[in-house]
Length: 385
Image (tube, rainbow, N blue to C red; front, side, top):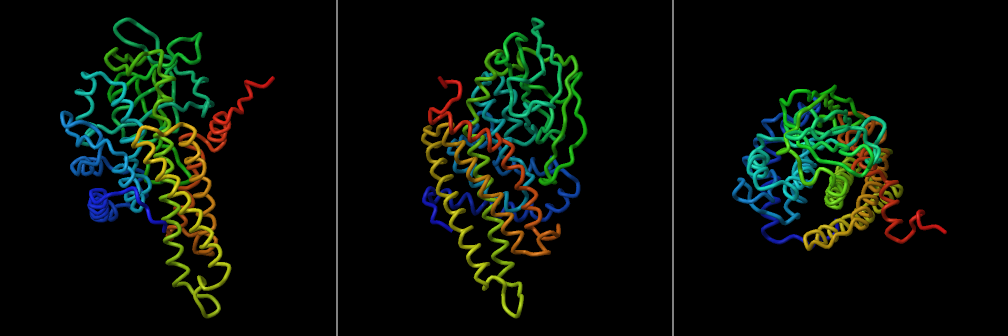
């Protein structure tokens, strides 16, 4: 593995503590959570007790004020070695920043302490049936009623959809403007808010994904994040970090697939010798090692750009695109090297293979990433002629 030079002694100590905690508190229950299709709230509470939730939150809210993204990077890397469905990163670095960046002081005082302790688990609802990456085509509506907004619509593919008790919901606020979008915080128990079925997925079996329905939900004005017509712009603000977070997970899973495969081909024998000693195995592993190391170099570069507030949307898209494509290729090569055993669920590579397929879809598909990168090169079709 490439020598990664972005971490200091404090980061190393933090990684060691996370690794020990995950081995003791998460690893023994991973198979149970996969069978149940959900990580229990008790695990979230334990993470909160360790200070692993919304680490960027200030001390006034119970947080540690750790804005250095590298701590979340380490958390993602270590937890993914134990359970791929424990979506702390969604809570910490996808949804949480909307509260941090857009919430008023009153809203932060009301919500952040629970987000830090694990009493409040976050989700975000953007995708709708029939409108995936096209946020401008969303049909969920919020109507201004003076002292509240009336929310109607439905969302799907919501990660943490069943276990979350607070959800940031994107909804159109002006029927005549596709870009007039508001972000509304819907809390568990609000009349008219219902959860649909738990969706069955190809992979990530310990992570709950669900539908959500909103029928005449009265959302208080105090539950609106930012300007109710600027949600589309606000959604764009955190996309670079969201895609960087995805990239960290992608390369971590690719690394894990490499590790388990190296161990397997070292022990497994065919024709009287370890299958790793055949030239085909050596060449494939060498190729994977080089590409995974390239991913680490790109991701670590992007992390430091983000720490220094220099990460661009195009660079984040490139990291998300490349790492997700490499992850998909690596897990396929690794499963092949396992032979028939790779197709069996009892082998970790089988689960990694299934988990990896979503990486090229969520947080923006590979096609959308290419569009973003291409437009950044000045190749926007809207400028033709």
